[in-house]
Amino acid sequence: MIKEQTALLSTQQVAARFHELAQQEKWFDIQEEFFSEDVKSIDPPNSPYMGYAAGKEAVRQKGQAFVKGIEEVHHLYTGAPIVTAHHFAVVREKDLTVKEHGRIQIKQIMLYEVRDGKIVSEQFFY
Image (tube, rainbow, N blue to C red; front, side, top):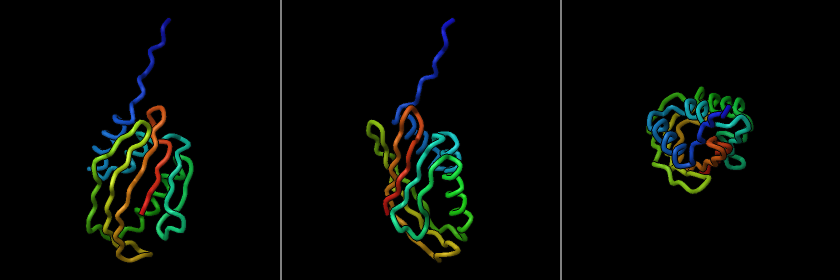
């Protein structure tokens, strides 16, 4: 009996689907569909907004905590991905009013690493 193998998505395919969902602001769908169980989420050292999380559930909680604090969305933008062999990067702009910080404007580069069709790390530069 021959077992049928499911083809792993390439970095380009992950990035394309990521972009589709990001344009709809479906960030938790991205996490559910693509994040590995041991994914890492890394913000800049000493970031006043978010920190480091490891593991799919911890990363989800990190995102949920940030979203929970948003009082008003003024502007959101996510650029098209730039893709290499195992990474893709997107530009993200956020203009938000957040409970603990007031109005914040963040322009960032978001870098994702893909292995075996799953995102294993996300790192934010702002």
